[in-house]
Structures are given as structure tokens and as C-alpha cells.
Length: 256
Image (tube, rainbow, N blue to C red):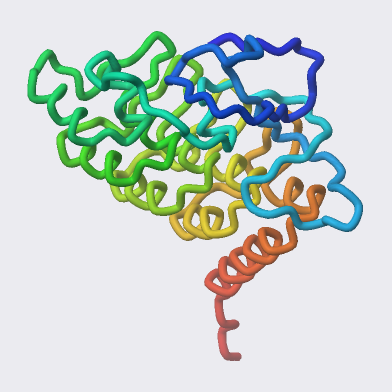
């Protein structure tokens, strides 16, 4: 998907809260249908050196991660459901967690389980992006392929990591997905989890062998990002992981 923001826009944008509900891919009231995730660190606000998980900094980055996530991902609450769920696509139903209607769609056949939308997002990718764990679990049991990558190499794992959905990350890792998938926006699941200050998600990814040396396009490793952003808990998790790796690799000296 092409970003709608100019290339020189280096900030992680935050859309104003509105009570409207946007379907996946629907254009927002301001004309934007994307959110921008940066992997280049920026200076935290004074007196708030460790933001809450999922918060974003108001300043800059040289990297944009364009997705189709809409009002719900931006933190807006759903005030009204569409007049009829029958008009929603399988991707929209997956994103909203409308499990009963999703099941009805799949029972119709037509090989919909791994059907991509115009951006290459499958129902599983949408459900993972919105944190719909029961929908993710159902889709996996039904036969959804967790290894599929969207057009810009976005994966269900990378989008679940972006949102800090640790339980979903765990479900996907059980399916042996590539934990170090590097997308065209310049990030891996671990880099996105660190950038979002998602401590538990970082722990889960490291425990399964996520690569700590991979750099974002901005040149920052996961530890670089954590330090630059002042995410002390994430730093501690990474440091503890490095220490465990070091200790496990120690070989006792041969007795003379």
C-alpha cells in the first residue's frame, strides 16, 4: 500500500479521535487511511522517559510503516456497528472479530480462508493486526496460513507485534512462522515490539530466538531503539536476555 503522507513526514501520526467506525481500508474523515510507525528513535517528552506501552512519540523518524489499520487501531472506540453485517467482507469481519459471521462466510466455500485483499492482507493478518485472538485461533484451526506475507512483506506476526498482542504472537510462533521477517518498511517483529514499548511481547520474541542484531533501515538495533527512547523495562529485558545467552555459552576451562 502506498503511504498517504509525504515522504518527508518523519512523525508517528495520531489521528484525532472520532466516534465513527472505519472498515478495514476505509478512508478516514481527514482523507488518510494509514497510520505511520517509525523505527527511528525520537526524544521522549520531559518527565516521561518511559511511556506506556502502545504510546507514540510526537516527533520523528526516518522510517514510515504504512498500514491500513483504521479508527480502532488509532484508539477510537466503536460507537455503532454497520446496519448489516451481511455487507462486510471476510477481511472486515476478521478485523472486527465478528466470528459467527466469519464462520458463515467460510462455510460457503470459495476458498476464502487465505484470500488476500488488494494490499495482500489475509483475514488472519487483519485479525492479528486488531488483536482479535479468538478469531486468530479459529482461523488457524480452520487452516489459515500464518506464513503468508502481504505486498510489502507485512506478516501477521509483525502486525501483532506492532500492537503488542503477546498472546497472538505466541499462537503464531507455535506455527513456526519466520520470527525475523524483514518487511519493506524496514523492520522485524522484534523491532516493532520494541518501538511500541511492548515489554511482554519483546520477552516472548526473544525467548523464541528473535535476532537482536538486525537493524532497522534507520540503522538502529532493538537495543539502540530501547535506549534512545528511554524504554527502561525493554532495555532490562534485552540485557537479561543477552546475559542468559552469554552464560549459556560459557565453557568451563579445562582443568590443568
